[in-house]
Length: 69
Ligand SMILES: [Zn+2]
Image 1: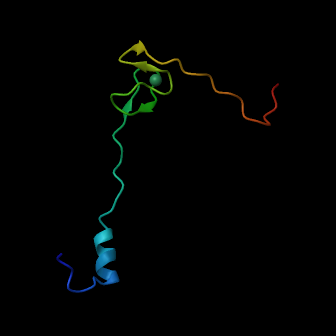
Image 2: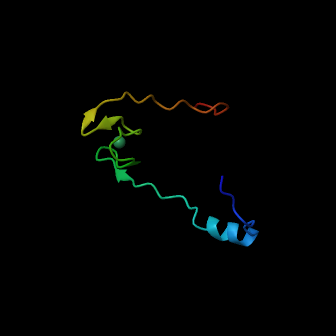
């Protein structure tokens, strides 16, 4: 099996890693509630997809310890 002749320096390794980057996700806006959503997915805010209700979105529970008035 072929093997590298020499060890790559830390500098060379680190220079190569400068190209490791996170790609920004492309987001679209929900036409129903204007929330930022992933394309081709049902909206997590209102549960609609292409103008139709497809998911029943549960209402947010009040946080523990939060006093109710
Ligand atoms: Zn929505």
